[in-house]
Length: 588
Image (cartoon, rainbow, N blue to C red; front, side):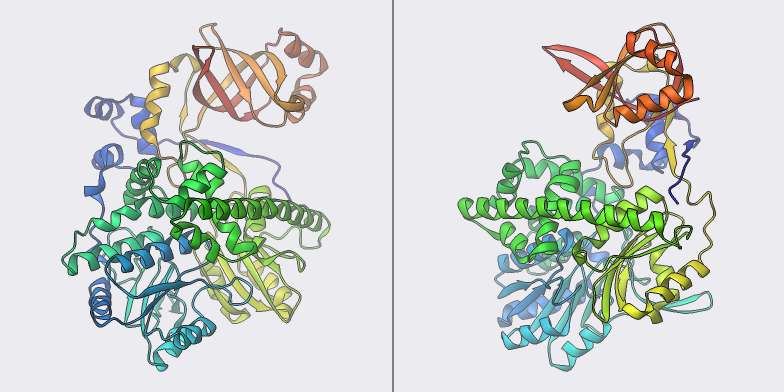
């Protein structure tokens, strides 16, 4: 059932914070936060001041030299090439990067994107046959292909040249503790997760792999290897949208990609930004505003429209496509909310509600939103979740996991139950026979070794910081931590005895709360809670009593509350003041 508690944990990583602060001209608190991001002292320079020159050498990718030779020969001979991407934000941007990059070198290149319903994920026989019928001689995949052994063999048997570029986990066969990777029989296989790949950082997305392949190819053809960095904004967009960790070179790619997109010359990206009302793009906008519009095309229509948007040169046509994608995303939001409500209602009444791994069969929902619903149920119930949909013999599903449960590994243990599957430790997609759903639920729950602590919601706190320590300079300095996102989250601060002196409702219909809070030195500071006001007030009353609640509302409050927070600078009518945004709270 839904977790009833939340564990607050303060990170206690050790380092000489004062020395690091002095060396890099930052506050010791900022140094502590960076250490909390698993950055060693020798990595501070790259974290704080990393530039494009610090990106890893693309020539270290296994098979990239072989792929470059093949592509160079194809360009010289005029062989028609087809780029085959995928229908999500990473596959869309990767397909755009490769197609446009190859054209810059004079290649006869076009692209194809699988239809989520008709084709399913990645390379398939239909796309291969279509490429042959269209006279294509070479196929290059992006953001897919590493698990398409049979499909690649089919293409090779048909006489096609095949290059696979991907970033997903490589399939393997396990013999005890030994794993043997299974690579598709392509002419070149580029995937930083290959066990024999010397590339130093395996956490890049498919679009970054595509950009790096182009860098090697440009250099081989006596062009500036930095020319493909014109696609940096797309690589950054895909990195955030595909939820890659903002570590190592990903952090640099996103940092400089955000700078580039401010002045983007891409009519499609500019139109989408205008349609979404965005002037200054942040990593947040990549992940939660612009990205969902790109993904919505592949979910409810065809992802070709998203690639068309990126390729479009006419501003008017780009504007029309952007409006279409935005409308699809609005539709997707409505469908997702209904599916989430259906899933929650099912869980509350299901005989398997106490399972530690949820297998939820929602036959009528659109398969494209199964992953989103799985993610929301995972957050709500804090356990691995598989959502399956479809009414035929073959059904499809998506999974989202928790840190302690490697979804891909656990699925590999019962791979006989899937007709096709792939993914990461934290997420997966699959197809299977409907008749095997109950067996999948039984097997996964019999195999799991999750503890109650693994499933307990956990809030990691960077620093227990008294409010008196906050200054305007410190708040401004926190910007050196950006871009923020997966793997480099926004810092979390906490205080244990946080006295709420006064509370008042704010926002539309009084949904949120604004507080006057007391610091240890007796100063008063403003705080806001952008969460359910009624939930807070009801919890306050049930913990401290109605009289205490009346005191809080009238400005006589004196009960300490523990909170997790983040400080900001609020400016109103030209006057700046420090304000704290309450992220979590705990009574008693």
